[in-house]
Length: 244
Image 1 (tube, one colour):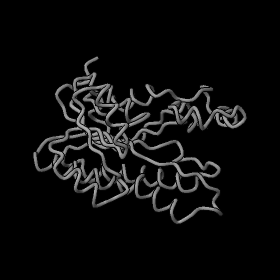
Image 2 (cartoon, helix red, strand yellow; image 1 turned 90 degrees about the horizontal axis):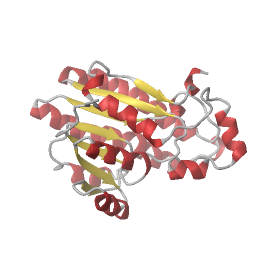
Image 3 (spheres, rainbow, N blue to C red; image 1 turned 90 degrees about the vertical axis):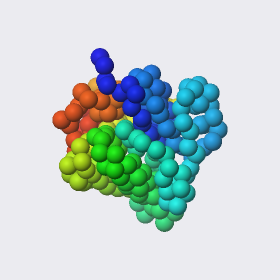
């Protein structure tokens, strides 16, 4: 199935590892040009080595001024995937200012800033565009020790709707994907405890966690012309978790 991504230019944040890295590789395989944003130069170096032609940008998205400087001259972008995020887990009574600041700066504020930069460019060029925000099932369900993370993702879902509302007249579609636990290397490590995993798996009708390609496929669909009438959507990739 032709997704209509060939020749388009995409920007992916959090591109050094996990879901973001896999999105970059999938977009390149579909014929898109890709700007890969990560805060870790070594990850970008290995990504460029694995996938020549990727345009690397190393910046910490928690730093507003550095992000503005790094992306203000990024050039025309047709597709944006806001994937960068942090998950700092603490019991509610032990939540720190630092965890709040870092989490909201990366998981929400950076999405606003990067999306503004990209959307302004789309509007100035008079071209349609697509933005996909990587949210989580945690945006809609309370999870122990996830007070700050759940809050950032709940805010991201509402931001997605607001962006869809205000950018729609400019022919810019905005959607989110909301995965369950994803079996990235970090996911496998964090959910390696059989008891911890069972508690979550018992709440998933399909009885399994998501693989990276499940999330990538959903994102590619939302970026493609095949979803041309879809905007303001939160697409679960959760094996039915949110249905329970």
